[in-house]
Image (cartoon, rainbow, N blue to C red; front, side, top):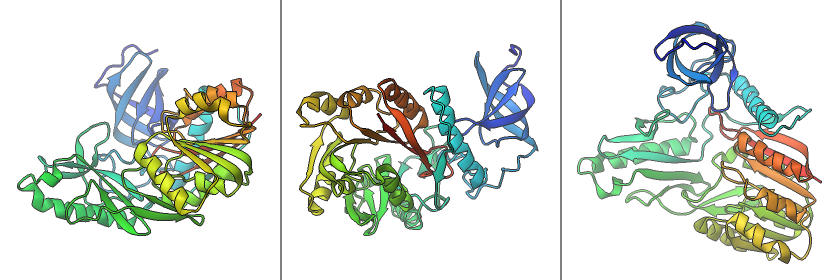
Length: 398
């Protein structure tokens, strides 16, 4: 191990691969060095910015020999804005890296050797995002998104990954704010504005005078969903049909439990295929929209609960009147560590786990494997192009 490398030192390195998070990994005399905005397989001159016992971080001083996967970023804010990490890579390289993130997490964290190919579904790499949280700083008159590794705001006039109607909404918000900034208008004392697009247009939350704040509507696979910008809903409308199809497939049976159900994205189509559906969502406002969507669809076989997933599974396991055929779960980025053992205790025939973080997915799959479940299918979906994030659908059976 190189003990002489210090902050400020400049060294030449060759990158190996991307780590989950988007940084490239290089090595200098055995020490791992993480380099943002680097591509796999290129020669770099880097300057050390942080030194730990087991690794270091660095920034690029010069690209000596660029990788064949390096390209010019489409956005002028790339590198300053923290919203994207991978615009400097060809899209093919991004997709390859994301399947590698999933496989590496399974092997390293889950101790799961997945023998097959990990297919990845994808669509447009730009102009796809249909919801976003815009940051406002009335004192500096900046509107945009957080800078990389910072709470400071990068002032953004136009964003390459926003859907066209949402990019226009960002411009509209900037126009409306420009007059209010001079007096630090009360409307812009809040720091975050949620914006989202649906078939009915664009909405803002919190409501701002002069900007629409109504509920939105979106149809996915013939199911209609109503929601607001501040209630959770997937942010890539162009892949929602793919996500639903991958998560549900041809599943059918008597009883299915849908945990972390959101506004009912999976609940509604599951109710068309199962005799009985139990949906569980912890956020009160989101659960209210789920119930409205269920009622609007005329579904009478859904029992929907506004409850913490762990608490509901733990307390309700004795009152199900039968073993579930299927449990579907789509937890937040932190995963479902406190829930998976309770799910296993229900002994469902099948479990379909939708995850936005391969590291917590791998951890939870290990717990399910230890409880007798086998991984049978694995699909990645690139819901978040130009970023390191990747959605994964894992299917398990006993």
